[in-house]
Image 1 (cartoon, rainbow, N blue to C red):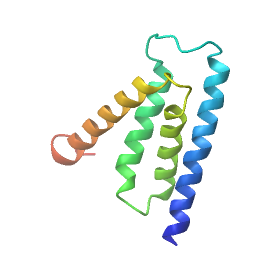
Image 2: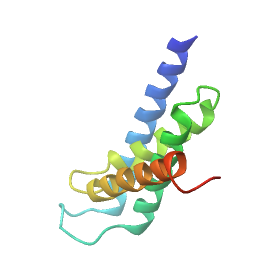
Image 3: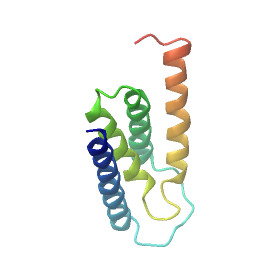
Image 4: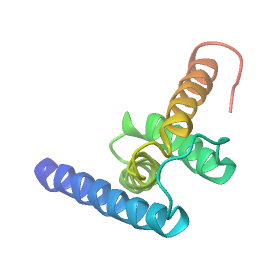
Length: 108
């Protein structure tokens, strides 16, 4: 049964990557130009990493892990150059939230 779950995670990551790449090509027709951080993509990647980190350790939350993987792969697989700052910031923010939630201050 666990092999099917991992296969589903891989397929969701692939679908998110392809859809992110297609979205990126529609949004940016020009070659990579260093510009400001894309706020909607930053929100998507932070949300994806927070969901993934908080649900990955709990195997009963299959849907949460799937949604997190899809959101992460959507931003991660954008055209070369786009989405890298958003992904890095998303990882840092989600690890900070996870650490605060489980070890320090936040009690949700």
